[in-house]
Each structure stands twice: as structure tokens, then as C-alpha cells.
Amino acid sequence: MNIPIVLSTVGNLVLMLAGILLIPLGVAFYYKDDSAIWAFIYTILVTGVLGGLSKAFFRKKNVAINIREGIAIVTFSWLVCIFLGALPFWYSGVCTTYCDAVFETTSGFTTTGSSIFKDVEILPHSILFWRAFTNWLGGMGIIVIFVALLPAMGMSGYQLFSAEVSGPTADRMRPRIGETAKLLWFIYLIITAFMIVMLCCSGMPIFDAICHTFTTVSTGGFSIKNTSTAYYNSLYVEIVTAAFMFICGCNFALYYKCFQKEFKKVLKNSELRFFAGLILTAIVFIALVLYFSQSGYFNNATNDARYYNLGISFRHAFFQAITVCTGTGHVSADYDLWPNACRFLLVLLMFFGACAGSTGGGIKCVRILLLLKSSMREFGRILRPRMVKHVKLNGESVSEEIITECS
Image (spheres, rainbow, N blue to C red):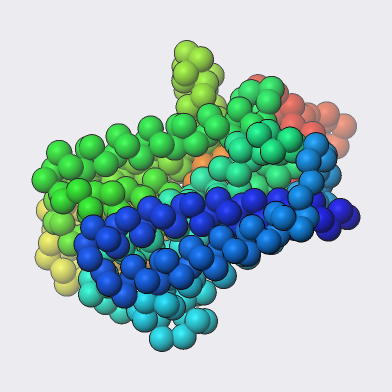
């Protein structure tokens, strides 16, 4: 493995991170967060020096990156971004230990959504912004940003892109991988901007709208409110949030096909249909269970009378099914009070996850779909041993290698 090219490439990404940190620094100046201002300045200096030294000592051009180097670069890049991204939390004093800061940043960049903070509303605006921004950067993958810039450095980004993008199959949208990365981020930016505007139309403050959008389109779930989306108590906000969680839970390659006006291919996409059907089924089931549980139909019925109304039951079922299936983590109600049948289904949705090639988490629907089709084929072979049948996805046969990888 070419160690210098790995260190040089990681150094370039660290320099890019230093530039990105200027954005929350600007927010700190705007809101006059004195402790956070110096925290971001120190972090930018440390990040800039480390990136500059790495680039200066290990500078390489016009070098092809193989798969081993690609995996090494992606791994080290994530680790470096996490350790350096934790510095503002630590320097500002909101995290008493560096380990706590690393935990928070890891959760942010990986869009996990877990947090060490019991009360996020007391945090400085700039720290809240950086916290939400780590979600947004990690949602599409900070590596994908970098891949878009690699051609200008004379490097190949295919191996980095392959190591970063999730899913059993890679749906190549463009012949040049750099253009693909740029297109992905263009779509991501358009979705982000559109959601910010939609939330502002509800009267939500611009700062709240930006942070809430960052944590929604990335399906990260880092809310700036202790009670998450439930804080706003707005049906409009819940509908907009749920809609964009679903949008970002779909394969981004489908949006490129929309640009190409291939709407029939999008509507016939097997994974999209499975994903939508899964969520729709969960919504109906949860809503009906919540509604009938108020009449004592279930022994473990909740005493929360808010769910007696069928409309409200569907409202919360709609939001919670989408937020759980996409791995976002926003909440509109305390589902820990719901009947066990609802909570069990929500746990299953967590494992199923969203679509491959999305910002969502989980196993991915395409893997579940391929496993189901493969299982049905094997069951058919038991009944008819001589049967020859290929597993198909979107009308095309799937290789045995991919099916094995999914299992």
C-alpha cells in the first residue's frame, strides 16, 4: 500500500475540514458566543497545521488509488474528521472530557443520533449549529465531497467512492465518478434548501429551520430541542419533516433518473416500492392499534387519551414509522407509552432501514428484498429440485455473488 498517497489525500481532506469550520465560526461571531469563537479558532489552526504538514511532506500527483488505499483513506479520513471535529465541543467547555466530545462528534458524523447532552437547549448557538452540521456532512458522506474535488488534484476517486457508498450494487449515474459525486451533492443541496424554505413558511425561526433541516435530510436526528420535533407541536412541521425523511430515505440515483425524465423506471423500482409499501403497512397497523387500544381492545393499552382520535393516531403513526425506518430519530410523541405491538414493529423497522444509496441507515431495503426473493427461490427448489430460476431486481437478473454478499 502506498502510505504517502494515503497521508497526502487525508491531509487534503483535513485542509478542507479547516475551511468548513469557518462556517460555524461565522455563526459564533454572529451570536457572540465568546467561548465558542476561540474554540473554533483553535480548532481551525490545529486542523490547518496538520493538514498543511501532511500535504507538504507527502504531496503526490497523478497517482491512481487502488482499493486497499481507497479503504485506508476513507477509514483514516473518518477517524481524523471525528477527532478534530470533537475539538470545538471540548475547547468550548460544553463537554467536560475529550472522550465525551469524541462520542458526540462520532454520533454526528455517523448520523447515529445518540447524545451525551441531557439539555441541548442551553448550548451556544454555534455549538448547536456545528452539532447539526456534523449530521449534514456525514449524511451524504464527507468523503463524497472530497471525491468531487479529487480531479483537480490529479487523482482518481473511484476507489474512494466505492468504499464510501453503501448498498450491494452501485448504480452508476454518470461515466465520470467525480461528476457523480458533484451531482449527488447538488441534489443534496437542492433538497436541503427546499426544506429550509418549507420550514420557514411555517413561521419557524431561520436558525431552527436550518439546524432541523440539517438533521432531517441527513437522517441524523440531532435536534436543537430537548423534545425534538414534538417541541413545535405543528402538524405542518411534522408533515414537512416526515416527507423529507422519506425523500432522503430513497436511493439518490432515482433523483438523477427524474432529471433524465425516466419517471417510469423510478415508479417501477423494486426497492422503492418495497420501501414505500413497508412504511405504508406500518403506518396503518400502528394507527389502528393506537386507536383500538383506547377502547380496551388490547390488554397493554396506553392510558394516553391523545391517541383516541383516529386522525391523531394516523398523524403520529405516519411520523414515527418514517423516522424509525429511515433511522432519523426525530420524535413527535413518546412511543414508549404505546402498546407493545407498536413498539415491536418500530424495532423491526429500525433493522430494515431505508434504501441503498440514501442517507438512511439500517440493513437497507434492497438487501431485505433480495433475501426474500432468494428465500422464495430456495423454497421453490425444495418443491421442484430441477427448477432453474434467477433472482431478478428491476427486471434484471442479480448475480449469485451479490446475493451471497447480501446474506
